[in-house]
Length: 206
Image (cartoon, rainbow, N blue to C red):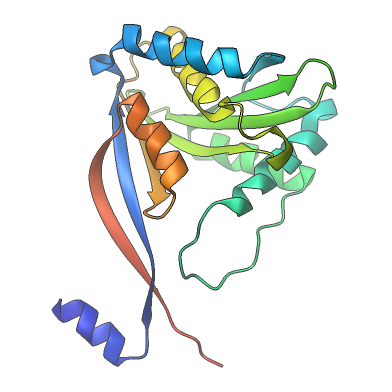
């Protein structure tokens, strides 16, 4: 309260609250998740999941850049910010920066079988020096492909992949805006639990 009153007096306004959640893969009820996956799969008939690691194939770069830009639809509370711009070059820079930081990237995409369009994706990075620890990056679905439970399908599909590819992995951390009700419901369905909250402040200098 004292901190909040101080920054408010300085002209800053609370702009967002992020909630950090953590998933313990070693405590996961896989039978329960299999049920959620089957239910999502029935809604997502006509899609397949495609695994990509570490780098996006050249022929998919434009489509993946468009998928990544869909994250601009996520709530940002009261932050006054411009949409992010994602290009194929930025995707390549992200891959190079992740490798330089010592993180292994796993990307799972949902592809529509009839059209070949990529409808959604999810990304997790694993620490080389702390291989029991991973970070959930974007999970996003293009507007035209929403309403088919692709987010649940992708995230459980990623968990299955990592269970086999990274058996030492225990924790995955993620952050969402407190107002991002949809993704919070998905994460809680998968067993994520709150470990931290943080608030951001913004001041208009004009």
